[in-house]
Length: 75
Image (cartoon, rainbow, N blue to C red; front, side, top):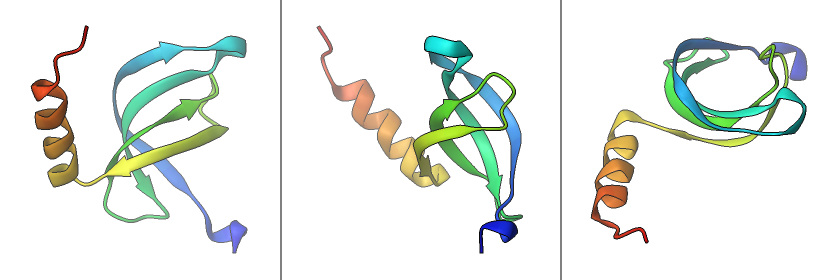
């Protein structure tokens, strides 16, 4: 089943943070195995060939997350 796995970073929105060894946490639009792209936050190696655990969002979920973050008083 792993041989059927593929991904394509359709659009990169930016880097959230940089880590050790050239890895960075990024917000991207990613198509997983040829499916409709989703918004994705995860760590990536500098060449984007390896990835860490992450979380994906539909457009509606990302809008809800944005609204939630905007409502929080971060100190």
